[in-house]
Image (tube, rainbow, N blue to C red; front, side, top):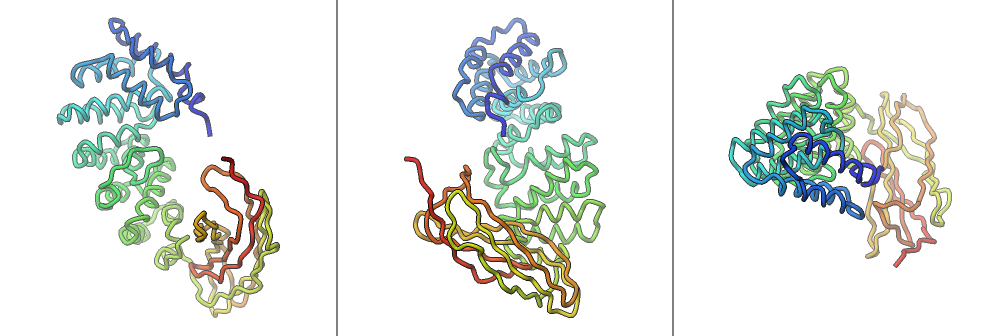
Length: 371
């Protein structure tokens, strides 16, 4: 993943300053210039907020003053483009939210839509959603009908319940009816860019509103497009990993007479960093062809001695009556930023169409934690 220096480093910040000065020669932008020189050591979001707050300080007054400046900078050369757009969009959203007038909010939404093709306005949109949820959602619903795929994607991505890196909007996680109409309008979108956002949004909703998600998936299955199957596979992936029977059925997974035999861990002792190998045989004992979703579940040892399950995709296969397949996998244990490993007994299980085998234990050793 690129670093903060690579995305919003000194050179990008100075180009932002140059662009704004060209748009408003009478403004000195002293605060912004100082902020450009103080980015070293700051995380990406800290840089965005520092530059946005500096821009707000240098352009005091009502929202229209900042909006006019941004509109001029947007349309001139050198243009606002790339990562420099993020602090500008956040500044617009913050100023509009603090003013809280319908005119400021609508003006900010219009500008965010005009900038989103240069760098997505999804993060700035969260500020406006928290300021006036009904008004912003109404605009997002209208964006779903835009001829611009970047704006259509903003309608879906900006309103995701669990958008990575973004401010949380609590009501989006408790009221799926707020955003499902947007997804209903976009699940068959001609743009893969938009459809991927729809799938991720649907998967977000499945974390807290599985029934609403399954109802939407059933509706889409009744009026599918060429890419609807992919959208559903991606959007229902968490429910599939959880073994949700309705999600599995919607995706065409079938077969209840599936037998797992000779499931074994190839080494019950794994030294960190190292690899866990396991294998098994899967057989269809039913009278009809079965389509199977095969996952594996690692039960990671936690610091308090309990185990925490995490499901990983293994494969999807179709088995004729009586057909048998051999499956095997190697799972690597290595340093990652999203998990801390502990020495001791872990376990692994197979999951076939949502049904798990008995977990098989293994021991992980050699993990050291820096103090």
